[in-house]
Image (cartoon, rainbow, N blue to C red; front, side, top):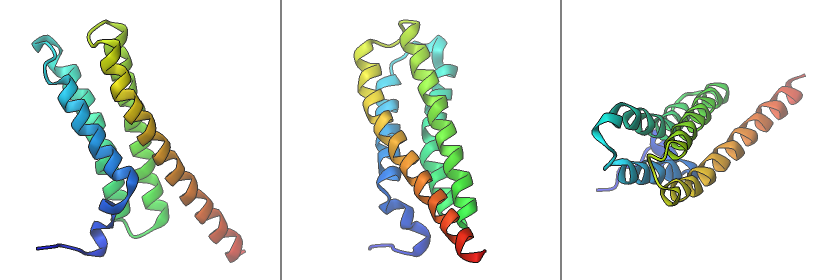
Amino acid sequence: MERKNINRGFTQLRVWNSAIELYILVCKRLANMPYDLRKSVSNATDACQSISRNIAEGYCRKSTADYLKFLNYSISSSGELFSCLYSFKAANQIPEEVFEEIDILHYKTENELLALIKSLENKIRRNNAKSQ
C-alpha cells in the first residue's frame, strides 16, 4: 500500500535522502569502534540522524521561515558530525579511508542542504520585496 500525503513530501527531497544514506553509512563505519568510544560514536550518530530529522520537521512546519529555521538546525548538526569525524581521524580512531568515504557523502549532503537554504532565503527575500 502506497502512503502519500503532503506532510511526507520531504521524502522526495534529494537532500533528505542523502542525509538518510549518510546516516546508514556512518552507522556501518562506526559500528565496530572500541567500547570506550561508545559515547563519542553515539554523539556522532545522533548528530548525523539529526540532519534528516530536522529537514523533515522543518518541511512539516507551515511557514517558510520555520522550515528555514529547521534547515539551519540541520546544517548545524552537519557541522557537529564533521567535527566528530575529523576528531576520530585526527586521533587515529578511524582510518583515513573511512573518513574519506564518509566525508564524500557528507560534503554532498551538506552542499545540497546549503543550496536548499539559499533557495528558501531567496524565496523569502522575493516575497518580502513583493509585499513592500
